[in-house]
Length: 216
Image (cartoon, one colour):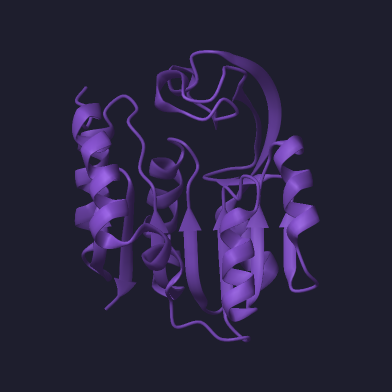
């Protein structure tokens, strides 16, 4: 039932931006024009746009919310493939909650989204499509993924468990994740960190803000 304390997350976020170097760390990777990058939870495309500008790799961006998918399309170049669905543990249609509160309400952006209603107190429900991550990786034929960034507002726990348990983690060189506070999130976070330690080392972290793992 435990959650990571929000007060500590707020402190971590401030320290991450001040000490770790928010912009530098999140975009500093040994990528080339031949690298494959996954952006799972692309939101408005700002993250992949910076990666695109710095390295021009092949980017596969997944954003299930139509209004944000449209923003991603506007930012993409010919090497960025944007898909209007999310990645998860199985194929399904599900409800996502899109925030409609002013920015700063409950410490979030007004247009925050999540499958977990507790993370978006003021919201409008929307039906979205999720596709099985294992099937998608096989469909695209990925043999190596240089970088996978996952920021999917609480759904990262189920997605990462699927990726690890099915061995897909072994083709991911670097993994950047933002974990979120949902029910049992602290226990699930500890469990995932232990699983990831078998294949990846932590290279930098600010817990429940952003954490980065590099393949051993």
